[in-house]
Amino acid sequence: MTRPTASLIEGDGIGPEIAAATVRAVEAAGGQVTWERVDAGAGAVDKHKDPLPQATIDSIKQNQLALKGPLATPSGGGYRSVNVTLRQQFDLYANVRPVRTIAGVPSRYTDVDLVIVRENTEDLYAGVEHYVDPRRTAAESIAIITKFGSERVIIYAFEYARRHGRKKITLVHKANILKMSNGLFLDCGRDIAKRYPDIAFDDMIVDATAMKLVLNPERFDVIVTMNLFGDILSDLTAGLVGGLGVAPAANIGSLDSGGCAMFEAVHGTAPDIAGKGIANPTGLMLSAAMLLDYVEQREAGDRLRKGVYAALAAAETRTGDLGGKANTEQYTDAVIRLMR
Ligand SMILES: NC(=O)c1ccc[n+]([C@@H]2O[C@H](COP(=O)([O-])OP(=O)(O)OC[C@H]3O[C@@H](n4cnc5c(N)ncnc54)[C@H](O)[C@@H]3O)[C@@H](O)[C@H]2O)c1
Image 1 (cartoon, rainbow, N blue to C red):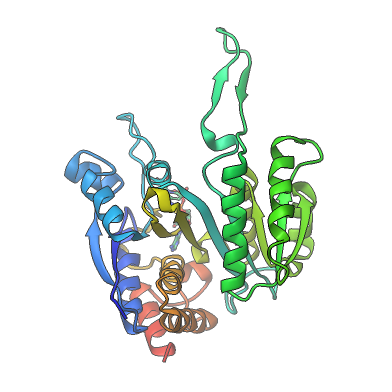
Image 2: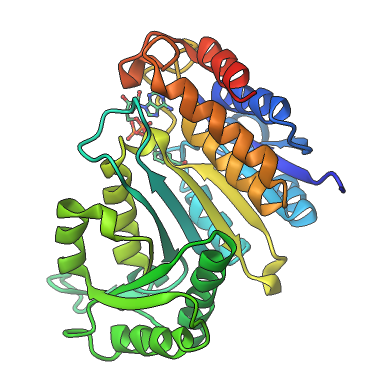
């Protein structure tokens, strides 16, 4: 097995604490990854006067693999969001957000296990908007949906389903009203589904999806959808299993832009608890487990998940934000002990 190198962006706030915990846990799980530490975010502004230094971009380009902690975008100074810049630079077109019920993590449901695959580059977030008149009494934002953008993310969702033994894809849209843009996305889905007879396919209007996710989330397996709906629904689904603190994410880039894959915790920098040694590293650990799956170290990924789920199950080993008694180090020790 070749040992991949991954760019590690520890990030701001609690980032360095949860990154250190995650690196320890990956190693204990037998993950064969060499970490190349690079800077981004507010910390990079202090050091390099740039929230996304060229050296960081070069490192990700070279390694085609990155793990990222949370970043604070410095206010003032006219800096662009690092997350948005990375997404554009590496054409990270598929955002993958798995959630599942975790024993011990407070939530209203017992049997959620679903994945949202969100198109990440088009739709209302394509950045095409303007004021209609000079007095700024009206504005337009334009949703761009292309066949190219739709097909690649839908194909990614089907391939992901196959690789991960998932049985069903639900395409979420609003094609009853947005007949052209969302109709195009839906048509692409129906066409592509014919190539995957082993995976069940249906589609659902986004508002009905929101209701059914809350009433009966167990019925969903893989959801594929456009950027805006995916943004909203992926936070909703994180809420079904205990919140953003336990939610991992992957961002998959196009081959044309270097074929990068970036894995990240989706919570913020938690400045209120930074430096106190009590942060919960679960989101970043589960993202690292996705990274291990991605580099075909599935056994190490499974071992890491096993340790995380076992440590979360008991109040003694769970972190304080989830009602437990452990700090970051005690939790990480438990993850490592219980993965064996
Ligand atoms: N992906 C990212 O890089 C990302 C995402 C969201 C917010 N941010 C940035 O983070 C900063 C703070 O944002 P915010 O306060 O809205 O959200 P936040 O997620 O940082 O914090 C919200 C609450 O959740 C708690 N929390 C979050 N993660 C935790 C963890 N791992 N363990 C224990 N507790 C945790 C915090 O202590 C806080 O009480 C802002 O600068 C924002 O821009 C970055």
